[in-house]
Length: 236
Ligand code: C5P
Image (tube, rainbow, N blue to C red; front, side):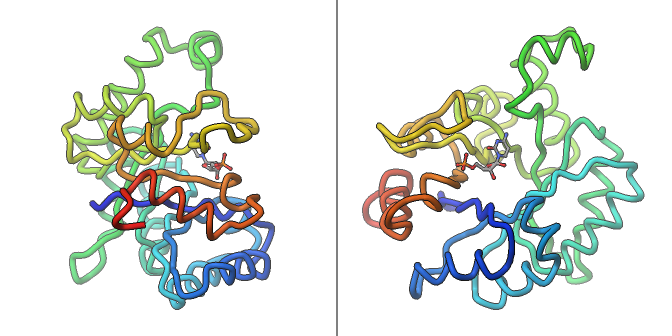
């Protein structure tokens, strides 16, 4: 998979999202639709972005019984999503059902990646609330291995976790990483951040950037900068 920058379109509705993407002229960035926008604007939002020529990461983080997740993934696949995700904590049967559900009659399917542990979960929560005795790194790596064994394509993780995950699951196992900020920029509510260039060095395949692009004075220029730093000058 070619390195790329995914813009997190965390907007309240379709009109706001399309107005924002209008700032990019003929460019069609890879975009992420999360729960807020999907619950507000629905499947029509995915269809509209696909019709305009965008690649779409549907960040809905499914987690339910295998049958329910498999059937839900079939619907998302039919919308034309390019990348979908779920929680690895749902277990192997759920991950396999999801992969099957995503597979279209012609054999193609969106890429499927797993959330291991949310980056908002800290060591204390892992131990005292989730009752997981293993370390955070051990848990994340074990969940990534399970995902790989179920035929998933990668995980969502911190760029800082990419090297350990690649070592455990192989270089072709995708790491899709949020928590990316320009040097000297605002960090917002993200605590462990890296720059696009550092994410590249650490081996991320795709970076997800929201506010550093959506809230920039010139979002198109911020996007070009992110691509230049992450993908390399020639492909910006
Ligand atoms: O604005 P910002 O660059 O922080 O946006 C990051 C995006 O990635 C948000 O849509 C957020 O929900 C998502 N995300 C994250 N951390 C994770 C998983 C998803 O920041 N572990």
